[in-house]
Image (cartoon, rainbow, N blue to C red; front, side, top):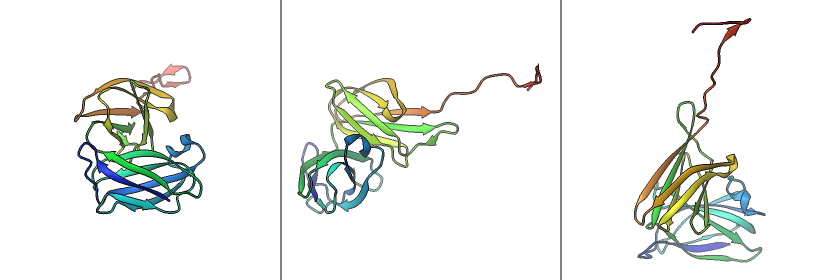
Length: 193
Protein backbone atom coordinates (compact mmCIF):
# COMPACT_ATOMS: atom_id res chain seq x y z
CA UNK A 1 0.00 0.00 0.00
CA UNK A 2 1.19 3.44 -0.94
CA UNK A 3 -0.22 6.54 0.73
CA UNK A 4 0.44 10.23 0.91
CA UNK A 5 -1.03 13.68 0.40
CA UNK A 6 -0.77 16.08 -2.53
CA UNK A 7 -0.44 19.74 -1.50
CA UNK A 8 0.30 22.96 -3.33
CA UNK A 9 3.83 24.18 -2.80
CA UNK A 10 4.13 27.34 -0.76
CA UNK A 11 0.69 27.55 0.89
CA UNK A 12 0.47 23.73 1.40
CA UNK A 13 -3.25 23.64 0.61
CA UNK A 14 -4.47 20.07 -0.09
CA UNK A 15 -5.06 19.36 -3.80
CA UNK A 16 -8.33 17.45 -4.20
CA UNK A 17 -9.33 15.49 -7.29
CA UNK A 18 -5.78 15.13 -8.64
CA UNK A 19 -5.41 12.10 -10.94
CA UNK A 20 -2.61 9.71 -9.99
CA UNK A 21 -0.95 7.14 -12.23
CA UNK A 22 1.27 4.81 -10.20
CA UNK A 23 3.86 2.59 -11.92
CA UNK A 24 5.60 0.31 -9.45
CA UNK A 25 7.27 -2.94 -8.55
CA UNK A 26 10.57 -2.36 -10.35
CA UNK A 27 13.78 -3.90 -9.01
CA UNK A 28 15.96 -0.97 -10.05
CA UNK A 29 15.17 2.72 -10.45
CA UNK A 30 16.28 2.82 -14.09
CA UNK A 31 13.33 0.72 -15.30
CA UNK A 32 10.56 2.93 -13.94
CA UNK A 33 11.22 5.72 -16.41
CA UNK A 34 10.67 3.57 -19.46
CA UNK A 35 6.98 3.05 -18.65
CA UNK A 36 7.46 -0.52 -17.45
CA UNK A 37 5.78 -2.07 -14.47
CA UNK A 38 2.25 -2.44 -13.22
CA UNK A 39 0.09 0.69 -13.46
CA UNK A 40 -2.56 1.61 -10.90
CA UNK A 41 -4.74 4.72 -11.06
CA UNK A 42 -6.19 6.69 -8.16
CA UNK A 43 -7.56 10.14 -7.28
CA UNK A 44 -6.85 12.34 -4.27
CA UNK A 45 -9.69 12.96 -1.85
CA UNK A 46 -11.03 16.31 -0.63
CA UNK A 47 -8.16 16.42 1.90
CA UNK A 48 -5.55 15.78 -0.82
CA UNK A 49 -4.86 12.29 0.53
CA UNK A 50 -4.53 9.11 -1.50
CA UNK A 51 -4.07 5.42 -0.81
CA UNK A 52 -3.19 2.89 -3.48
CA UNK A 53 -3.36 -0.81 -2.61
CA UNK A 54 -1.58 -3.61 -4.45
CA UNK A 55 1.59 -1.66 -5.21
CA UNK A 56 4.53 -4.06 -5.48
CA UNK A 57 7.74 -3.69 -3.54
CA UNK A 58 10.56 -1.83 -5.25
CA UNK A 59 10.98 1.39 -7.16
CA UNK A 60 8.13 3.26 -8.75
CA UNK A 61 6.89 6.55 -10.13
CA UNK A 62 3.71 8.52 -9.49
CA UNK A 63 2.42 10.81 -12.20
CA UNK A 64 0.20 13.55 -10.74
CA UNK A 65 -2.17 15.63 -12.88
CA UNK A 66 -4.04 18.36 -11.01
CA UNK A 67 -6.71 18.89 -13.69
CA UNK A 68 -7.51 17.30 -17.04
CA UNK A 69 -5.36 19.67 -19.06
CA UNK A 70 -2.61 20.46 -16.56
CA UNK A 71 0.87 18.97 -16.97
CA UNK A 72 1.81 15.70 -15.27
CA UNK A 73 4.22 16.07 -12.35
CA UNK A 74 6.38 12.99 -11.68
CA UNK A 75 7.45 11.83 -8.22
CA UNK A 76 9.69 8.75 -7.68
CA UNK A 77 9.32 6.44 -4.68
CA UNK A 78 10.61 3.17 -3.20
CA UNK A 79 8.10 0.82 -1.56
CA UNK A 80 9.02 -1.83 0.99
CA UNK A 81 7.73 -5.39 0.80
CA UNK A 82 4.47 -6.13 2.67
CA UNK A 83 4.45 -2.71 4.34
CA UNK A 84 2.55 0.51 3.90
CA UNK A 85 4.81 3.18 2.44
CA UNK A 86 3.83 6.70 3.49
CA UNK A 87 5.20 9.29 1.07
CA UNK A 88 4.08 12.16 3.27
CA UNK A 89 3.26 15.43 1.52
CA UNK A 90 4.04 15.67 -2.19
CA UNK A 91 4.25 19.32 -3.21
CA UNK A 92 3.17 20.45 -6.65
CA UNK A 93 3.10 23.87 -8.21
CA UNK A 94 5.10 27.02 -7.52
CA UNK A 95 8.88 27.07 -7.82
CA UNK A 96 10.32 27.19 -11.32
CA UNK A 97 8.92 25.05 -14.13
CA UNK A 98 10.65 23.61 -17.21
CA UNK A 99 8.57 22.19 -20.06
CA UNK A 100 10.45 19.99 -22.50
CA UNK A 101 8.58 19.11 -25.69
CA UNK A 102 10.01 16.36 -27.88
CA UNK A 103 9.00 16.04 -31.55
CA UNK A 104 10.05 13.64 -34.28
CA UNK A 105 10.92 14.52 -37.84
CA UNK A 106 9.65 14.53 -40.45
CA UNK A 107 6.57 16.59 -39.78
CA UNK A 108 7.20 17.58 -36.16
CA UNK A 109 5.13 14.69 -34.78
CA UNK A 110 4.72 14.76 -30.99
CA UNK A 111 6.90 12.10 -29.37
CA UNK A 112 5.26 10.28 -26.45
CA UNK A 113 7.17 7.96 -24.11
CA UNK A 114 10.58 9.66 -24.32
CA UNK A 115 12.64 9.76 -21.13
CA UNK A 116 13.79 13.30 -20.27
CA UNK A 117 16.27 14.08 -17.49
CA UNK A 118 17.02 17.38 -15.76
CA UNK A 119 20.16 17.89 -13.68
CA UNK A 120 20.61 20.98 -11.53
CA UNK A 121 23.71 22.71 -10.20
CA UNK A 122 23.59 20.62 -7.02
CA UNK A 123 23.68 17.37 -9.04
CA UNK A 124 20.05 16.60 -8.23
CA UNK A 125 18.45 14.59 -11.02
CA UNK A 126 14.77 14.51 -11.96
CA UNK A 127 13.35 12.34 -14.72
CA UNK A 128 10.03 12.24 -16.50
CA UNK A 129 8.48 10.65 -19.56
CA UNK A 130 6.79 12.67 -22.30
CA UNK A 131 3.02 12.28 -22.51
CA UNK A 132 0.78 12.15 -25.58
CA UNK A 133 1.38 15.89 -26.00
CA UNK A 134 5.13 15.21 -26.35
CA UNK A 135 5.82 17.12 -23.11
CA UNK A 136 7.58 16.30 -19.87
CA UNK A 137 7.00 19.00 -17.26
CA UNK A 138 9.17 19.55 -14.21
CA UNK A 139 7.71 21.85 -11.56
CA UNK A 140 8.85 23.01 -8.15
CA UNK A 141 12.44 23.43 -9.32
CA UNK A 142 14.92 25.49 -7.36
CA UNK A 143 16.04 28.68 -9.07
CA UNK A 144 19.34 28.32 -10.90
CA UNK A 145 20.57 26.43 -13.94
CA UNK A 146 19.35 23.05 -15.17
CA UNK A 147 20.73 20.81 -17.90
CA UNK A 148 18.50 18.66 -20.12
CA UNK A 149 19.31 15.27 -21.57
CA UNK A 150 17.59 12.29 -23.17
CA UNK A 151 19.39 9.36 -21.45
CA UNK A 152 17.76 6.57 -23.52
CA UNK A 153 19.19 8.19 -26.62
CA UNK A 154 22.59 9.02 -25.05
CA UNK A 155 21.87 12.67 -25.79
CA UNK A 156 23.01 15.53 -23.59
CA UNK A 157 21.74 18.75 -25.04
CA UNK A 158 23.79 21.89 -24.97
CA UNK A 159 21.09 23.56 -22.96
CA UNK A 160 21.92 25.34 -19.79
CA UNK A 161 18.51 26.73 -18.88
CA UNK A 162 18.35 29.43 -16.22
CA UNK A 163 15.16 28.96 -14.18
CA UNK A 164 13.56 31.59 -11.97
CA UNK A 165 11.06 30.99 -9.17
CA UNK A 166 7.48 31.34 -10.41
CA UNK A 167 8.46 31.31 -14.10
CA UNK A 168 8.13 28.65 -16.80
CA UNK A 169 10.86 27.95 -19.37
CA UNK A 170 10.19 25.86 -22.47
CA UNK A 171 12.54 23.82 -24.62
CA UNK A 172 11.66 22.01 -27.84
CA UNK A 173 13.82 19.03 -28.82
CA UNK A 174 13.67 17.62 -32.35
CA UNK A 175 14.61 13.99 -32.93
CA UNK A 176 15.69 12.76 -36.34
CA UNK A 177 16.31 16.18 -37.80
CA UNK A 178 19.13 15.04 -40.04
CA UNK A 179 18.76 14.92 -43.80
CA UNK A 180 20.35 12.69 -46.40
CA UNK A 181 22.51 14.44 -48.93
CA UNK A 182 23.93 12.92 -52.05
CA UNK A 183 23.63 12.56 -55.75
CA UNK A 184 21.22 10.28 -57.54
CA UNK A 185 23.03 8.35 -60.26
CA UNK A 186 22.06 5.97 -63.04
CA UNK A 187 25.06 3.77 -63.69
CA UNK A 188 27.83 6.30 -63.21
CA UNK A 189 25.98 9.36 -64.56
CA UNK A 190 24.29 11.88 -62.24
CA UNK A 191 20.52 12.16 -62.71
CA UNK A 192 19.27 15.79 -62.78
CA UNK A 193 16.44 16.79 -60.40
